Amino acid sequence: MAKNDLIIRVAGEGGEGIISTGDFIAAACARAGLEVYTFKTFPAEIRGGYAMYQIRTSPDRVYNQGDTFDVFCAFNGEAYEANKHLLTPGTAFVYDYPGGDFEPDAIPEGVHAYPIPMSKTAKEMKSYRSKNMVAMGALSVLFNISEVTLKQVLTKKFGKKGEEILNFNLQAFEKGRELALALNKTDAWRVADPAPPKDVIVISGNDAAGLGALLGGLEFFAAYPITPATEIAKYVATHLPKLGGTLVQAEDEIASIGQVLGASYAGKRSMTSTSGPGLALMTEMLGMASMSETPVMLVNVQRGGPSTGLPTKHEQSDLFLALHGAHGDAARIVLSVEDVKDCIDMTVDALNLAEEYQSPVILLSDGSLAFSTQTVPRPKPGDFKIVRRKMWDGEGTYKRYAITDDGISPMVDPGTPGGMHIATGLEHTETGAPSFKGEVHEQMLDKRFDKIKPLVDRYHPAEVDGEGEADVGIITWGSTIGVAREAVARLRAEGYKVKGFYPKLMWPMQVAQYEAFGATCKKILVPEVNYQGQLSHFIRAETSLNPIPFTIYSGMPFTPIQMIDKVKEIL
Ligand code: COA
Image (cartoon, rainbow, N blue to C red; front, side, top):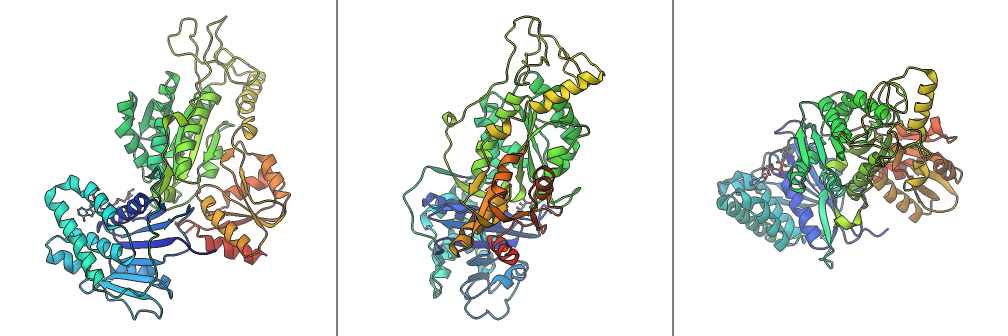
């Protein structure tokens, strides 16, 4: 496959403005009509530690962060040490020298080296904070990143910090350009020329989930901050009140899910967002939502676990918890997103499903997607259907848990005349009256599980990537799907018979679709970023397939080459 994308990695000390530099370059590429996919990782400490930002840009759609970088910009020695093994022939290496805190080893043969005295220049300007803008100016010249759009985004962000800071940074940007112009460019790397502008937004997975919530008619959000989910609540807090909704910051995750339950019982479309440790705390209330058939939606942004684990690192290891967390048989619906566009669309779906099926809905995102920014077609409110909960028509005697054909019972807003009832966590009869009779428990468990079963055929089917028979079928989920897409395409281009299967409705499981896919593949490989092979476990438990688990758990997402090499190994 001809390479028509460019991957730039910027790395240095948290606090040196790595993230801003990356964000500006990504925004400039998007404004130039190019597709972008960014990935960033930063330390759990609030200051200091290794921060890295990677931009992949192309005139065509990009689905993941790529195998490695084409251009590497090192702000300090720690970043250089962490990445020098990736400086292979053909790559370009921009680094803070002379005057930085390190001197690189001998530049490997074939690596294009560009020393830029970033720190020294910033110090001479008496504006150390502007070191990153010196670097950005140099990158703009060396790799054809539009100077105009970089200045626009720089001005937009730093303009808010006052005239002096803005001017320091504009000067630093210019200095960086001059320093690079004085160098002899020997590599061929360049950002593609501007394409016709598209009506897109460049947005992070977390902001996209917040936007999806608003487009999905959210009315109440209970928040408790936790990395890497906090930005969802921040986004909603900024915009929901303008739309007449309410966001409350609770004292902890248990209070958050309790407030969501209460607001939903009161008739409001409600949600919260959290990460693994928070989801663990919420499971008892999720059981209450399942038992009382109260619509509840939560976005769980997975991080390295268990316990406090790795707050800023990537993992998809909450599937066990999401699918079955809670004591007893607690029915719920679980969805997982692939990319930033899904974070918008499927947050709307999740709110609609909670309301329609009167069930807890958990939407699984993950750490790399939370902070990844991607180009997404600009969504418009009219694009989305809002599904309302089934309401009592006021006829006859009201029974909150009436047995109906589809298992969905009519709800009422509290205070509705004739609509008084008990919404209880105790097992109960159709009227909600507590009951401990065996036959009632059987009837109501059947009801709570049967009502969501039709989803396996009603929700979007899992995507099958490829036709006919295959030697290897790759089944994966979450943001790992984006990596599989590229691995499948590259393997096919090399003549391998490989297909992909990308489920997004994780529970109830679309078993027939897994079986149909498995019947066309000699081997099934299940790559996922967790230790136990959690999806493999459910495939073995729920289907006749016998997948080969392929797990990594380094706090980083897969790269396409890792999957490609694994497929070749098992073949
Ligand atoms: N001139 C002036 N200000 C600049 C600048 C420049 N040239 N370059 C960056 N800045 C500002 C940025 O605007 C930002 O300020 P803001 O937050 O008010 O926008 C700040 O400096 C940090 O810069 P940024 O580029 O966003 O990040 P960074 O690359 O310096 O990395 C992080 C900093 C991301 C490591 C750190 O800010 C962080 O977020 N740490 C917390 C990590 C975490 O969540 N831990 C888990 C806890 S459980």
